Image (cartoon, rainbow over all chains, first blue to last red):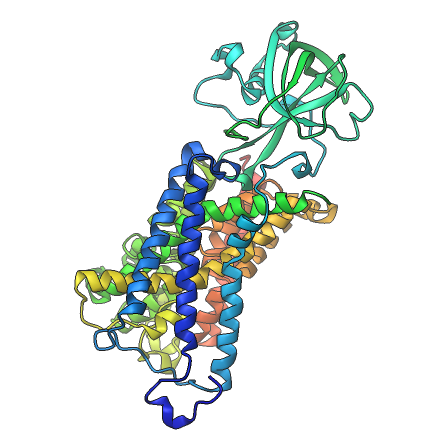
Length: 274
Length: 308
């Protein structure tokens, strides 16, 4: 591209047509991004780490389909250029320093658009964990603003309630003491901050979201474990026990008195949906 | 810290994966319009009454779903076809938000609620308000840069400029292929803003914000200005800005989130560049300042008087 004299401009046939190369690279990025999305959605894929797959998972299919459509459209265009039907405007800056710097910038921009692929394929996919909790997690169920679901959580059978259902039930209850002694079983990951170090307490935590991890918020219940706490933070555990009301951070708070504590697989959907 | 990169990647990819279908839909719609819709038809259908026409300009986005990058060239072409000035200005400011793709993405992010409704109501108020100011000036020559009046149209990207379609209507299949190629160019143009914006939002989520920013974020007045400025700088496409807003919504006031969602699509760095290519400088200043003030006023009012 350095050796273009003004004469060859009209024939527009330099050694390498970099604009065309960049168009091919763009097309390649579209195919790869589409394949990445498909891979996330295949059985065993990791889409649930990123978005609400229950409500919005289908959107990713739309995305992949459009990426492939665009990639195919531009593949055909690049393989069968039809200059008569589609007049290509000759670049007036052709061969100038401006055009060269624009080409260079275009490579930088192309690099930016590969960032999702680099982070998606290069970094191990992990759901948000206790390290993603930047401020101390409140144990106060009424302060969380948990919203409501279509079915009132108190109408869900206690043995079917997940962590979010339990917290909603507690938050809506006029009197917490009515739950004292009730059996409870929840799944979540272990979370301990400075408040719990060296005690028999920890929190069992799940992230909740409605759209994608951009709106993810952690929620949790304090667990009192007289049997000791033998697991690392972020271990997924199934906690069985009974509800008790105790003072945590100076507030009457429903907590779990653990009767059994066992490690468990990370659920297929690591987040609970609002 | 160990594991931080994984969390950052998860937060970033969450926004990107959720946003990318909407960005694709938006760019595809804009490609299809470029290829298949004749702008003359729209101008013909406009009512003669300037006030009525201006109000209609606010809803024109639903016929022309373009995001802020596509709207400037389309407006310029509409001006050339004889669209009244005030209608064009209203269209210019409202079309990036007033379109089906943005309705869908805002709904996906925020669900049915005040943010969804108020985003559209506020956009209509601001766009029609500014448009009505321009009914006072009926001669486009006064506000358009002289050499721009007759220049050929180009799309939002350099790619689109190169591949400007021929004026006659295209047959279906080659037209579709052309639309896809135009969309590709715009996708890459807009994709980089989305990705840079998502990187910033993901970093904020991963590392938290310090006390000073937190204090600003919960202040009903300052938070609005900050989010308007953020919208201006990030220049993220209106079809996907909801997902970034969502990342800010945990920290910032609801009024400021609305300000981001209303002002960002109207004026940002990239649209200012495009305005400068079309309008006289003084007009560009109006287009930046008037929406800024009206949006700020409404958002601060909401912050002070409405409990969301």
